[in-house]
Length: 176
Image (cartoon, rainbow, N blue to C red):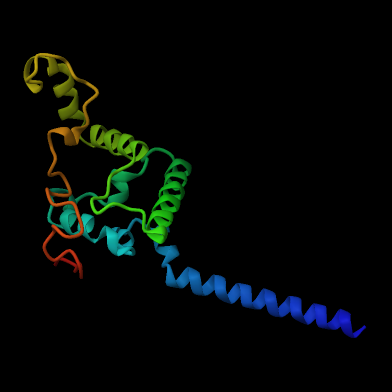
């Protein structure tokens, strides 16, 4: 009888402690901010300060948030699946300290960004593709597989893309 009560109380205590640890980790990691479209969620990890700081000073900062470029825009399910995949990859790299000084976009994420560039700038990209054999390609070969940033390297994150190269990248502040 006493063993049964001890087991019940121990189980309840373990459950309460587990819930407390879960709530603490949820709060400490700012996990709920990742459900929003706020670009500040991207700087929860100090590693992303450079990307955020350079984006703040770009032409895209006035009209486009991080998720509008970096996540699928069609389906909500696809958007949150991409957020989960990227979040897992980011948290693993940041926790294990396996990210490079200059962060590189994954192939899957690059495909999403390219699709969003083409989607937002459909009129321009349509004209470029229609005239690629004459005006936008300087090698004489039609290259429709190029990424937008092959030519537009400074959009929207500028030239400096590592933790040491961007002035004032630590202590990112809100621009007024």
